[in-house]
Image 1 (cartoon, helix red, strand yellow):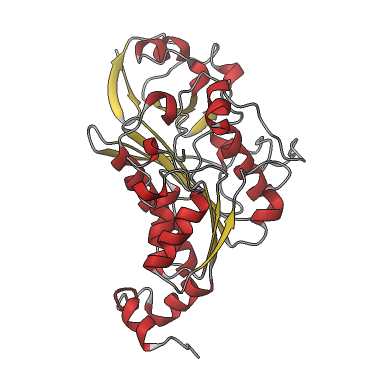
Image 2 (cartoon, each protein chain N blue to C red):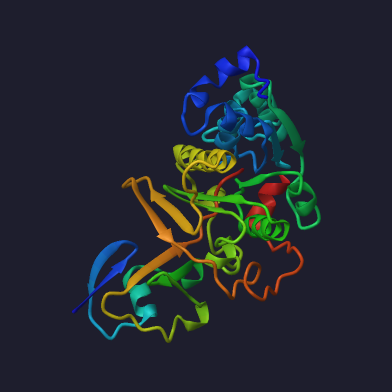
Amino acid sequence: MFDFTEEELKRYSRHILLKDVGVEGQEKIREAKVLVIGAGGLGAPVALYLAAAGVGTIGIVDGDVVDLSNLQRQIIHSTADIDKPKVQSAKETIQAINPHVKVREYKTFLEASNALDIIKEYDFVVDGTDNFPVKFLINDACIMAGKPFSHGGILRFEGQTFTHVPGTACYRCVFPTPPPPNLVPTCSQAGVLGAIAGMLGTIQAAEVLKYITGVGELLTDKLLTFNAKTMDFRKVAVKKREKCAICGDQPTIHTLIDYEQAACDLASHGK
Amino acid sequence: MAKITVNGQEQEVTLPLSLIELMTNNNVEQPEMVSVQINEEFVERENFPKTQIKDGDEVDFLYFMGGGAF
């Protein structure tokens, strides 16, 4: 029933050896379709680990090109990739690691007009974006489409993540509306320790693989935060809110919203 | 003195104490940037000014965190 080649059995042997994964789990991983939104600091480690793990189909959404300042943390891209579309650079790296993976490139930014169409093809969505308008868009689109997703955010020396599956707390249950533009600094304004992206991205990748294989307990209804200065990790219990505007009892949001970006983010998009 | 927990750390505070005062004491300069939970219950932003801290409360300030791509 499992038609893995000898090459694949050897490639994935350290997964297959795991009692909780086995050949059955590896088959689920191969059948899985995961969408990674943003091929940047978080999307890079997420996509690399999912590719190495043998996720059958990986979609990557990013409208940007590789910039020299990305390379401090976006380890899916190399110096030779500067000015190349991030989706192309990411695809080449993924296929060098694991030619079995089918990569679908979306050289665009996620917007209200394309979000549902792109997301609907996938089993799981990973938020690896750097700005709040798209984080809220991913949340709302995934709620509407009934898709599980992993939220991730990093800034300076800190990171936060949680996993949503239908019925559990969503991003708006914790943060009802986006912060006013320009009030919250993004990485491009405030800086970030490169390795933090790897710390958080690999947590997100592990959550995806746990979801696919059904192993363990997901970070649902829990916000995991860490501060790398002290290496303190905290899990804060969060609840689905009855009054949540998107997943509550009487949702007030029925269409996707393109929130206004901070002006400096828009400027960096255009470059 | 009352004992409360703020983001997992015990603090001794003097009551009465409003949530806004607690935010100031904990250097939360921009309330727009945090979500607040008290004893795992979400506090609506419009209720921040009238919310009073009680002995034994567990308060979590959850910050917006945006980075990732780019």
